[in-house]
Length: 148
Image (cartoon, rainbow, N blue to C red; front, side, top):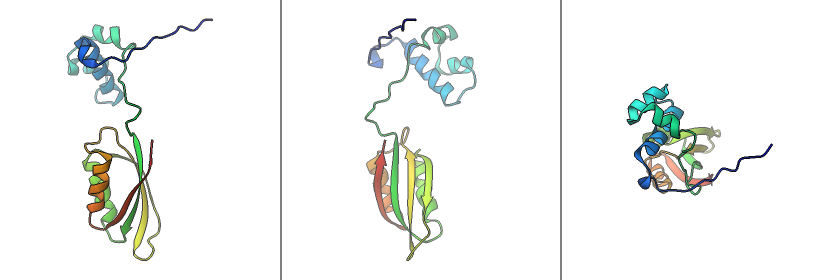
Protein backbone atom coordinates (compact mmCIF):
# COMPACT_ATOMS: atom_id res chain seq x y z
CA UNK A 1 0.00 0.00 0.00
CA UNK A 2 1.39 3.41 -0.91
CA UNK A 3 1.21 6.41 1.36
CA UNK A 4 -0.38 9.52 0.00
CA UNK A 5 1.89 12.50 0.45
CA UNK A 6 0.11 15.55 1.81
CA UNK A 7 1.45 18.94 0.86
CA UNK A 8 0.94 21.79 3.30
CA UNK A 9 1.31 25.51 2.90
CA UNK A 10 1.69 28.18 5.56
CA UNK A 11 -0.63 31.01 4.50
CA UNK A 12 -1.66 34.26 6.18
CA UNK A 13 -5.35 33.99 6.98
CA UNK A 14 -5.93 37.52 5.67
CA UNK A 15 -5.70 36.23 2.08
CA UNK A 16 -7.95 33.19 2.58
CA UNK A 17 -11.62 33.13 1.61
CA UNK A 18 -13.93 33.89 4.52
CA UNK A 19 -15.45 30.38 4.45
CA UNK A 20 -12.07 28.77 5.19
CA UNK A 21 -11.33 31.10 8.13
CA UNK A 22 -14.83 30.54 9.53
CA UNK A 23 -14.40 26.78 9.18
CA UNK A 24 -11.39 26.96 11.51
CA UNK A 25 -13.42 29.06 13.96
CA UNK A 26 -16.25 26.53 13.88
CA UNK A 27 -13.82 23.64 14.49
CA UNK A 28 -12.37 25.49 17.49
CA UNK A 29 -15.88 26.00 18.95
CA UNK A 30 -16.52 22.28 18.61
CA UNK A 31 -13.15 21.32 20.10
CA UNK A 32 -13.73 23.53 23.15
CA UNK A 33 -17.31 22.24 23.55
CA UNK A 34 -18.65 25.80 23.28
CA UNK A 35 -21.23 24.25 20.96
CA UNK A 36 -22.41 20.66 20.71
CA UNK A 37 -23.25 20.28 17.03
CA UNK A 38 -21.80 21.25 13.68
CA UNK A 39 -25.05 23.07 12.95
CA UNK A 40 -24.63 25.26 16.08
CA UNK A 41 -21.00 25.99 15.20
CA UNK A 42 -21.88 26.98 11.65
CA UNK A 43 -24.70 29.23 12.81
CA UNK A 44 -22.45 30.90 15.38
CA UNK A 45 -19.67 31.76 12.91
CA UNK A 46 -21.98 32.43 9.96
CA UNK A 47 -21.19 29.76 7.37
CA UNK A 48 -23.21 27.02 5.73
CA UNK A 49 -22.80 23.41 6.80
CA UNK A 50 -21.81 22.50 3.25
CA UNK A 51 -18.91 25.00 3.39
CA UNK A 52 -17.85 23.56 6.75
CA UNK A 53 -17.83 19.99 5.43
CA UNK A 54 -16.05 21.07 2.27
CA UNK A 55 -13.07 22.54 4.17
CA UNK A 56 -13.05 20.82 7.59
CA UNK A 57 -10.54 18.09 6.71
CA UNK A 58 -8.12 20.41 4.97
CA UNK A 59 -7.76 23.43 7.24
CA UNK A 60 -6.29 23.60 10.72
CA UNK A 61 -5.25 26.41 13.08
CA UNK A 62 -1.53 27.08 13.23
CA UNK A 63 -0.01 27.43 16.69
CA UNK A 64 3.49 28.81 16.73
CA UNK A 65 6.02 26.37 18.12
CA UNK A 66 7.81 29.18 19.91
CA UNK A 67 4.71 30.16 21.84
CA UNK A 68 4.88 29.02 25.46
CA UNK A 69 2.04 26.63 26.22
CA UNK A 70 2.80 25.34 29.75
CA UNK A 71 4.92 27.00 32.40
CA UNK A 72 5.86 25.90 35.90
CA UNK A 73 6.39 28.46 38.64
CA UNK A 74 8.18 27.97 41.92
CA UNK A 75 6.91 30.23 44.69
CA UNK A 76 7.90 30.93 48.26
CA UNK A 77 4.75 31.95 50.16
CA UNK A 78 4.22 33.24 53.68
CA UNK A 79 2.36 30.69 55.81
CA UNK A 80 -0.84 32.68 56.21
CA UNK A 81 -4.43 31.86 55.30
CA UNK A 82 -5.44 33.13 51.87
CA UNK A 83 -2.00 33.72 50.31
CA UNK A 84 -2.13 30.70 47.98
CA UNK A 85 -5.77 31.47 47.23
CA UNK A 86 -4.82 35.03 46.16
CA UNK A 87 -2.16 33.64 43.79
CA UNK A 88 -4.59 31.13 42.26
CA UNK A 89 -7.33 33.76 41.92
CA UNK A 90 -4.99 36.13 40.10
CA UNK A 91 -3.87 33.41 37.68
CA UNK A 92 -7.51 32.53 36.99
CA UNK A 93 -8.44 36.21 36.53
CA UNK A 94 -5.99 36.53 33.61
CA UNK A 95 -7.30 33.29 32.06
CA UNK A 96 -4.35 31.11 33.04
CA UNK A 97 -5.40 27.46 33.27
CA UNK A 98 -3.93 25.87 36.40
CA UNK A 99 -2.90 22.27 35.70
CA UNK A 100 -1.10 21.23 38.90
CA UNK A 101 -0.38 22.62 42.36
CA UNK A 102 2.17 21.11 44.74
CA UNK A 103 2.72 22.59 48.18
CA UNK A 104 5.25 21.58 50.80
CA UNK A 105 4.71 21.72 54.54
CA UNK A 106 5.42 25.24 55.81
CA UNK A 107 8.78 25.57 57.55
CA UNK A 108 9.89 28.68 59.43
CA UNK A 109 6.79 30.56 58.35
CA UNK A 110 7.08 29.96 54.59
CA UNK A 111 5.92 27.27 52.19
CA UNK A 112 7.33 26.15 48.84
CA UNK A 113 4.70 25.85 46.13
CA UNK A 114 4.98 24.85 42.48
CA UNK A 115 2.21 25.62 40.01
CA UNK A 116 1.95 24.46 36.39
CA UNK A 117 -0.10 26.76 34.17
CA UNK A 118 -1.34 26.43 30.62
CA UNK A 119 -0.75 29.87 29.09
CA UNK A 120 -2.65 29.55 25.82
CA UNK A 121 -5.43 32.13 25.94
CA UNK A 122 -3.90 33.98 28.87
CA UNK A 123 -4.59 37.72 28.80
CA UNK A 124 -1.10 38.76 29.96
CA UNK A 125 2.46 37.83 29.05
CA UNK A 126 4.40 35.36 31.16
CA UNK A 127 6.70 38.20 32.26
CA UNK A 128 3.72 40.28 33.40
CA UNK A 129 2.25 37.29 35.23
CA UNK A 130 5.50 36.78 37.16
CA UNK A 131 5.69 40.46 38.04
CA UNK A 132 2.09 40.73 39.25
CA UNK A 133 2.23 37.50 41.27
CA UNK A 134 5.44 38.71 42.91
CA UNK A 135 3.62 41.89 44.01
CA UNK A 136 0.84 39.97 45.80
CA UNK A 137 0.81 40.24 49.59
CA UNK A 138 2.50 37.20 51.15
CA UNK A 139 4.52 36.22 48.09
CA UNK A 140 8.22 36.25 48.94
CA UNK A 141 9.64 34.87 45.68
CA UNK A 142 8.49 33.71 42.22
CA UNK A 143 10.66 31.92 39.67
CA UNK A 144 9.90 30.44 36.26
CA UNK A 145 11.41 26.96 36.47
CA UNK A 146 10.09 25.31 33.30
CA UNK A 147 8.35 26.06 30.03
CA UNK A 148 7.24 23.84 27.14
